[in-house]
Length: 500
Image 1: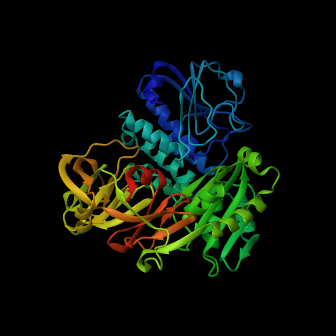
Image 2 (image 1 turned 180 degrees about the vertical axis):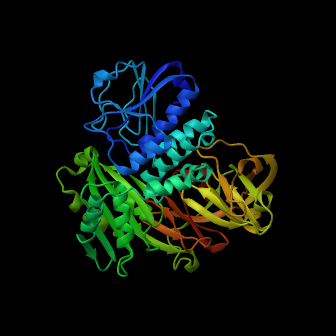
Image 3 (image 1 turned 60 degrees about the horizontal axis):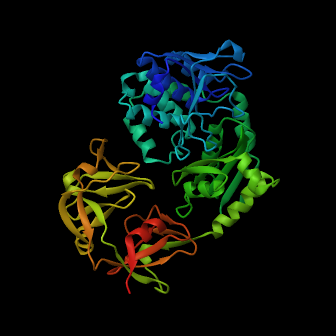
């Protein structure tokens, strides 16, 4: 769905969920300003048992003069031509029921219901503010033209990602770096996040924990509270000298909220969060800080009446038994099970790193797995892969594996690959510099499918691993047994053929 699709309506009511949080307000206010700029009659509303009371939200509304209306009685709203729900979905338990001629929805939760085909749900994005930011940008709307809009969107992402610690997608990192923000206001609001009661909740959570000495792991259950309390508790617990990983959880509307912290290089907080929420919710973030949500309905459908504490303890045990670890510097003791493959004649993109920046410039490649640090050099090239993934390759291996062409490389990906210069702190698109390259017939690798999840620390990065699931392929190059990496199953099958 595009926002321009909704411009056929003149009377638009934007509805936030009951007791709206920063993400709902940020999303709603940005959309309110957009439709106002299009000459529409717009209202920003919410319902529920009571008005907003949290100090940080009241401060946000006041400082940015956000016209959020509290509608206690549904009949007081009337029947608008279009009702657009943001950060929630029409008919859900945390959304007051208002009548409307047409319904549209924008959300980032995974319980989507469609109505009139006017729905935009992106459950792989951590905040609805990010979804709205992308939709507004696609319409050519300058979110930075209004400091209030850009600040509200930033604060929505800031709070829903536990102060940016749980961002999952390159789009979220782009948004953080693109927005002009009133940092003074953000700082002021951030210091009004917690009440005395919430401070007590955090204190009680920290003294009610379980501890596994062998794993150096702590699991903490908290009372229902603002999700950011979980992150606060996790940051405190991880400072204990005998704890490397901690999981904090509590019950919240519609399910359970998780916050994960890790300083164990072999246990990514993002992977653990994804594992805990697999098939029953969503999770992700950084390798050191992550979070997730377990949908109560999905949980009950699969695990029936198992108490959530038992599920988390059992799932954590399975997680630690679920993966192997491979360090590329050690190579393989035995290549048993590996077979020889060669790349199919598929066209990829390549960029010389010095085409982007002068030699010696440090920059980060922005990928789905995170940012990879590279220093521009005549000996370093970048490959643009089958799914738009970008990875560095040295010059000699590049020319052994690929035939470099001069034709422009054209391909459309869900997220256009980019790099971020550390010199001027700006993002640069890669595609304008990309040229075509084709795999050579003699570009061979050894590979085998993974029977068990595996974390590979490549020769490019010994601090962050590549994660392969069962069915993905672990590989090493024909002439370098230390060049070990993982290729996703679908990509491998599409781009490699076994050598007979």
